[in-house]
Length: 355
Image 1: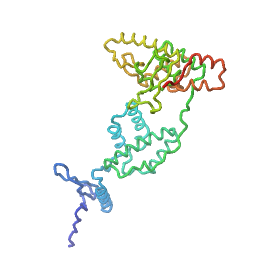
Image 2 (image 1 turned 135 degrees about the vertical axis):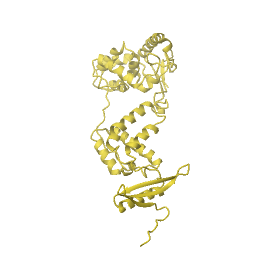
Image 3 (image 1 turned 90 degrees about the vertical axis):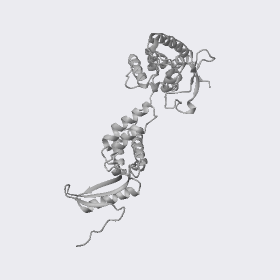
Image 4 (image 1 turned 120 degrees about the horizontal axis):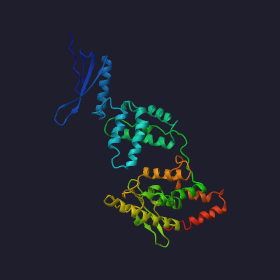
């Protein structure tokens, strides 16, 4: 009888399991803190298949991938990144990335085993998404997958990040930027007069301040009695509290209409503060909720849609962001009659940067 040759140290073991009727491969890949061996196992219908899996386990062990589960999926990696990889990020960023992951990444690639994900898989996925998403959105969904795999790679779940090998295809045309016409701007200003968003709309249209900057504006940054009156646009509700860029920090002189509107707005806010009583949270914000807290983007969009509807415009076609450049576009539009430009100039007189 021929003696059975022993496998070398570190080569693992291979045996036939009568109950499962499969070849079982196993190898020790380390020890737990308590001293117990950590054993990785794999199985195959044939001895050759089991040997191949054993070699793969040993190769992963040699590469440092000692605890990777073979059934760890792309979905597992993405969900892990959403749970732990977005710590400290702005709430809006977390919400957006979670939506993109659950809408575009996990349904398409989530069931794929992470170790088997290939660059071809990612290329096909991006090409399919390019039929419905803009190039910017494609960049964002690719970033979600890239960062999830990057985190998994750092934790020895996968050897390399194949997403880095894939280029972003050209997507659909994004939503074009647009501006209000003279009549539309006048209608919006009129419609906003009796609403809580009145001063917000006036400053957006007359000064071109970004919506995230106005939401962070405090009364200490407003000088209604200066020469000229002005607001200091130095903060925003972006992560970290800074403006979009350092060059975006600026002090804007205000035309008379802005000054009058802000004074009226402050009076209305005093009334709201008294009505709120002990519920009021004094954050010194120019634009705040009924209890003094910071407005979020949803609050502003909802109120702005009501103003647009009152102005006779389709509220689904416009966003608060488009008020920023509407005035400049109006003045530069050669199709606007001279008398209208003159009327606008009287409303927006003294619009300039003073710092």
